[in-house]
Amino acid sequence: MRVQSGMRLFVIALIGASACGSSSAPTTPGPGAGPGPVTGGVMGCAITAAASTTPLIADPKSPYFDQIGLAQSGDGATTSGYVELLAHASAPDATRLPDGTLGVYYHNGSSGGSIWLGRLQGTALTPGSVITVDGVAGPRWMADPNVDVVNGRVRMFYMNGESSSVRRFCVAESDDGLRFTTRAMAIEFAGGTEADPSVVQLSDGSWLMAFSRANHSGMGLARSTDGLTFTAFTTNSLGVVPELAALPGGRVRLYACAAGNVDAYLSADRGVTWNREGTVITRNTTGRAIVCDPTYVPTDGVFIFKTTDAM
Image 1 (tube, rainbow, N blue to C red):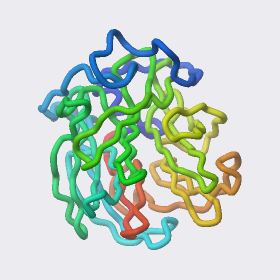
Image 2: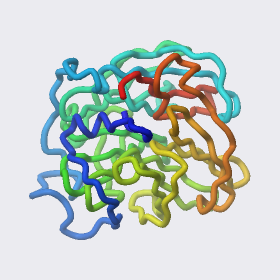
Image 3: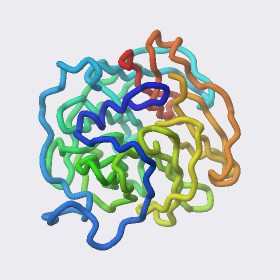
Image 4: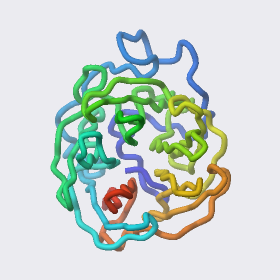
């Protein structure tokens, strides 16, 4: 979907967000931000329409031709085994939901964006229902979900791609993992090409966000004190499509996609510096051209990701 070294940003292409070639400056949300009048929800993240229910099967480079895969991992740094969970799906993110089930959120490749929730049991992923945000089922312009349970509620960060000139990451919460209400606009960027937000709470109570920078040219990092609104503080070139995971002792692990594989890095200083840990999973493991969009669920010992042959 969205990896460096010649790989294109499939979901953003689908949702109609045109790419700009230059790097953009992040800003925290301010009064009056957002496209047009808001009839409900959060300014800048208001849901304006539902997505098409028809997958874009005519385009072989769309997420409809991606797959969701799974490998076993006891430590989050190494993997073994591989099984394809779901074809015709992209950009997975997994978490143990309040009802006890293991939920996998993914993009189904429909026109305008649409996020779905499947349930994983063992190595079987059952496709589920499209999510609802602010009362709209299958809201348009959503992509790249990052989901965790915070204070007993499911919190989703996602890319709002409605504007081709301004990219926004939004936050929504849900009691059941299906019906969400927008909470905040986490951060916005002039230029409209940032993507793939991942957020984790650190041991000191603060929050760290990682994301793909302008046209997947690298990675950015942002901080927050409340877990809702963020301010960018640095960039790096470790890879793209990041995923963050908190570790014991105040450390944090960063997964990044590079050269078609998923690598891991460790930080002991809240994301200021990173040391390479190793390659977690390679594309050769799956027989596909690309492995990306990692998500690790330590309680279940599973590493979930996207595979694709599309370039």
